[in-house]
Length: 250
Image (cartoon, rainbow, N blue to C red; front, side, top):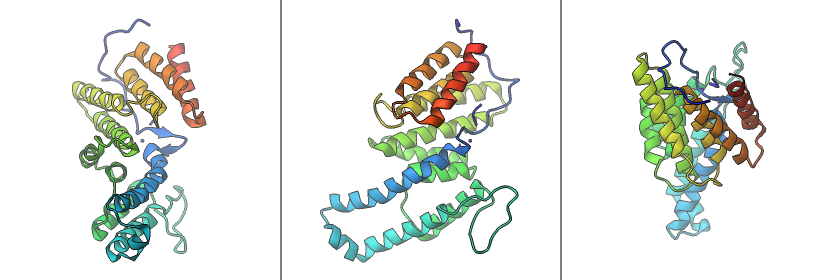
């Protein structure tokens, strides 16, 4: 996924090459979210049990709950296997995948085989990695109304999936419309200015505004993202600075 003032009317990016999927620190954003989502997936099982009034001890004794956890463990075991370097040869003693797509396909197959229940934000990321953009969009939409971090991640994923779909459009007007839809998803991503991933929400909004030719708005949003990066995440901080430098120099 890629990194790529009085505002002028937005022009369809007919001559520009569609941007690659967004990447942060050399990894796809989906890769960076994956460990976070795994924690949420496991936590959601516990929360669901507690909400049902079942004690933790009883939960461990319940065969259905144990089976559900075992299914998730088998899915996550495959998801944890690394993607090897481009020129590296497979090692039969150390399972790995040739690409993120190959791994995503394998995890999705295991989910289907096990009948494992996984969160929309996680499954949507797998579908996006697998290149199944329309399926990813549909899956992410299932989680967008969630009031927890799951909803934030689903809305972020939806924006990324819509952006990827727009980038693949050959028609300039369809591509621009797709970018506008992605911008709307990122705008809705985190309504709490102090909530988790607020800086990422602003960063994505800035990127899409820039793609749409709204350079002044993009610059202002990058500035806001910089201010919102209270956790001082060095990777997004560097990306914001690079974007601001590019806008300031043009």
